[in-house]
Length: 342
Length: 251
Ligand SMILES: Nc1ncnc2c1ncn2[C@@H]1O[C@H](COP(=O)(O)OP(=O)(O)O)[C@@H](O)[C@H]1O
Ligand SMILES: [Mg+2]
Image (tube, rainbow over all chains, first blue to last red; front, side):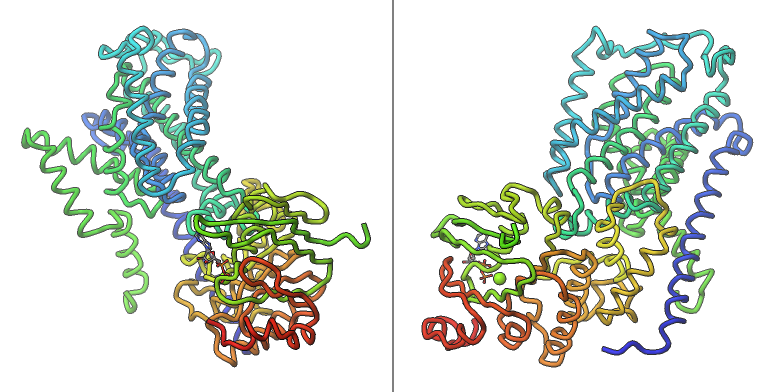
């Protein structure tokens, strides 16, 4: 087979195309993170509470989607990692109120990440429905522990009064009675760097590339020399860590942790959020969480059957836009840029 | 160690429920050799490849590579030791582009397949190398195409390109000409000639033109045992081989 002479140009077109896609993704990412940072000044004070919830559940949903989008595995028990970190954060704050809280958050999240690596040894060896069922069983098991182990978790009463009067941010920098905005800023200060780093790892490094190759064809990846189990396991641990950061911040932002933070309802809510926003885009779940939280808030003001309407809206959305809101937006954007071949 | 074989199989048996597919098979391949492996359908050729590359474990027997017992190593460890294989039934990264497929193989070969310390787009040498391999395999015009949209013949070439990118010491090809037209098969022989230079080759193939063009020794498998082994001329003249294999058309 001979190589035609027009190849040089073909290659540079290819690179330009790829570069433009990378640039588009990077700009959308920066815009979204700028919006997260500026949000307290953009939304009315009454919405600050919802905003904090949306951002933390969005971070959690990003964690869920790390496994779904990049490894192609649907977890029905991801609240295990969110919940374990939330409990751990509450217990750590109670035990070490003088230790800077960022360290405690990292400790709680690292615990969730390690738990992910441990449980992942069992879970990620399975694929498809078997993976989902295993995560469901693990999630139910951890929920049962939280529910039964009253001495540590407070059982159905949950844990409260663990917030110290002054939150130590750094030695010498305390927040006394932190306001909603201050807690939000603490959340954003974790969300922005950690999600950005995760996005860079999964979209722009050989590791992220390996995770996606393993998703597409685990067998071939293995025969090319990839330790496929380890790749999936590491990604699962990363997803557990990200969910753990969200859970730890959730404990701080609510000042209360109960089995609501670890139950199967939360595991499914986060799936719904991710699908609303669009699982094909790294940041889709964050959008989905905001839409879910603000949507259910509006709906619940109008009708007490808001969960029914929310469910119907979700079904309609999944049927009409299987790639979620982010998929719809990228479709519209590509039509705007290139109207002729939409 | 000069005469030690690169690959040695000792008394390999493997069955799938019913009878044994491989029955106490022994085989030894020296470095630099090009070995054709033929036999009727169901003789156990693919099973043998799976045992050498780690997709399967034998019920009994050992697999030695460079004198090292690799019988229980997982596939990725064997790949890292220098064993590369292609697939009778295509096994590619269908949602990725041709370039991304080749790049995936190259990243693993260079030992940076799972690092987080590099940006993908900064790996210019890898891009350059992917383009060279694509050019060699006649895939350069399709570098940006999604693999599952490519015609079958090009997907076959990509399968070979991935093995090429691995730069294995031992190349194992499982029916690389399966499903190709006569013209495509001729192109394939040229491509294989180019890429196996300096490698050790195990070639399973039904198309005897390909086998004769590329092998310097041939092993004939039948019912899980070695029926005979020799130069292409010896095998071609062997009456037993003519009876079980060459005489009848491949099924
Ligand atoms: N994974 C498997 N499970 C069950 N039977 C198998 C499996 N792999 C191969 N076989 C059987 O082993 C025999 C040899 O198959 P194979 O090695 O593919 O033969 P060849 O490649 O020589 O045509 C066939 O009868 C096939 O049905
Ligand atoms: Mg076969």
